[in-house]
Amino acid sequence: LLDSPFARKLKAFVALSDDDLNVVSTLDKRKRHFAPGRDMFHAGQTDASAYIMATGWACGYILLPDGTRQITAIKIPGDFLGLRSITSVDASEVRVNDLFGAFAGTPRLAIAFLWAASRDEAILVEHLVGLGRRSAAQRVGHFLLELAARLKLVGLGDKTGYDCPMSQYLLADTLGLSAVHVNRVLRELREAGLATFQQGRVTLHDLPGLIAFCDFNPGYLDHDGPLLK
Amino acid sequence: LLDSPFARKLKAFVALSDDDLNVVSTLDKRKRHFAPGRDMFHAGQTDASAYIMATGWACGYILLPDGTRQITAIKIPGDFLGLRSITSVDASEVRVNDLFGAFAGTPRLAIAFLWAASRDEAILVEHLVGLGRRSAAQRVGHFLLELAARLKLVGLGDKTGYDCPMSQYLLADTLGLSAVHVNRVLRELREAGLATFQQGRVTLHDLPGLIAFCDFNPGYLDHDGPLLK
DNA sequence: CGCCTCATTGACTAATCTCAAATGGAGTGG
DNA sequence: CCACTCCATTTGAGATTAGTCAATGAGGCG
Image (cartoon, rainbow over all chains, first blue to last red; front, top):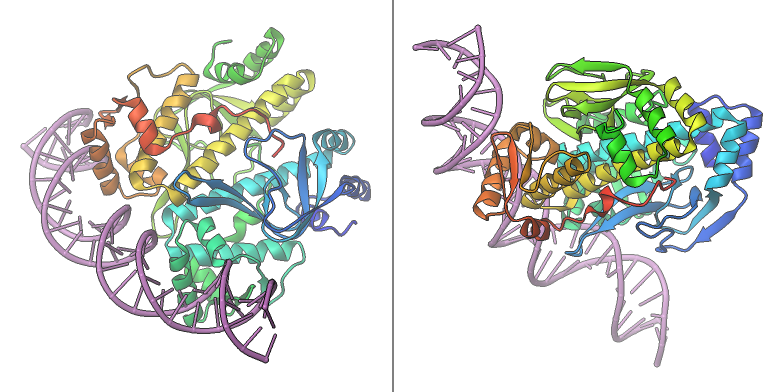
């Protein structure tokens, strides 16, 4: 339990005592399972619960009246969320009251949560920048690199790459592109020897090259924090 | 003081007692002034202060190595921020410790701050959706409508429109477009009789028409809250 | 006046989307 | 095992959107 993805992530950036970690593990009590494609939350739902992902991937999204979809966040194990599952997801339900209770006794834990929230916002901002000002190829590459870094932090993936359950359609709706164009860009990256996205597996063939190509700066993923904002 | 834009905004969504409002006004003590174009914060700066805007406009932005800029947020009076000023800005500096002190005695105030933070995130998400899935014209119109709603909440603007100090370049960097294209889109909106953006003034000639055209749903600006996330 | 910045417009280019079709694997029922 | 369907991927061709480059005005300001 002390080695859950969530605890792993917090430990990487906020010094937590064994007592703090024990409190974290008590939050992990109420386990729930979600089938692939199932909605964990609905828009506007004011629920007194949230979830910490243990296994699986999930995304948050908005549907527009013309039928298009924009994915607003991709969540992996260790992330805090209220979203929709992509793959089969195991998550711990956390009641708001439990959370406040946990904070009362362990202030460092509150700081860790604030740090995590601040990081989530930084990720959101980085996606905004990508949608606004990066080319399709840079956007795709940047996203693949971000996922690699986030997964590594919770102990997933390896030197060569990582497993990624997203279809090219999901990638398209995440990056504001058409699925057709995502496919073409992936081919470009593959032919340039930078990265491969195939059969549920992302392989980073030329990490330094890809980082240079996308102007990827991981600072936003391991920032100092938490900032107040 | 009880009628500052910030208090006004909070009051609109969270029931605050006179005591709560008095605590709010104590936060407004440390007034500061920022000249147009001046940076109030620098990237990555881990400062123990934040600001509440009283007058003026500000924006947050990221500069990319190729010289382009993406504006990540536009802030108006009543907003909470750490950013850059567009016009001359008056703001109250708030120390983190003061904030925690204020929360300790007035829990409803903490809820109000959480609500405001949650609303800021909803605005960010809506911009993300716009960049990813809306046409240039819808994006521009949607943004003009959002500003109208946000300004109205803090008592700025009127039935016909509002004053807006943004240049078309700033609008372009906010919406992920080129300044030239922003100009063209504004002309379209003008010729369609929907809205005018000229001489620092936004005039909404056909509000229902513009709302329909942009699929503007203000729900994200006055959501129930605060949600946990 | 001379020098800015911002707004405006035209002509052309480039990026991305849409439509359409072909491919290929995974499951399903016979 | 085979035929069939479903879904994701792949590719091509042409249309559309938005960007780039370039030039001209219009207004503010020393």
